[in-house]
Image 1 (tube, rainbow, N blue to C red):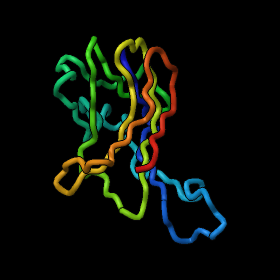
Image 2 (image 1 turned 90 degrees about the vertical axis):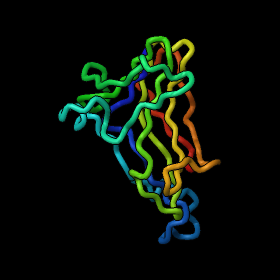
Image 3 (image 1 turned 60 degrees about the horizontal axis):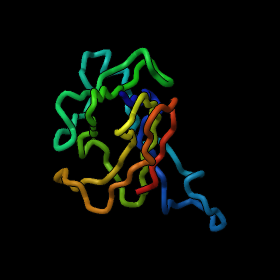
Length: 164
């Protein structure tokens, strides 16, 4: 069982919610002001010998056994030369990006977009999640948004969260 996240298309997308410059008749702000805020490049970390992408860390705890791991995969990839694959081995696996690495502006909405491929997920699900942390790195209640989960066997699937 494994879930793989693609190399180049994984990133936080900035959506301008109340940006100036829009004319009164324009209803879909997203189509006019949508640009990558942060992209996660799996190529660099692998090239310099990191075990995980820069600023990513494995999350432990109940239901997240130590024997599961994420690792670079140059055989199964989407777009780039490397993906980041979660080796489930019968348990669940979770990685998160370090808090306070992406500055945010309250004038904007944010969402997460990425590509995921799954193999043989029977009990586990693969998804992307986004939330805000305060200046001390603590999660702010009510800001967590998850994409629709994938299970079973899926070719590369684009997942996009709703804006936060």
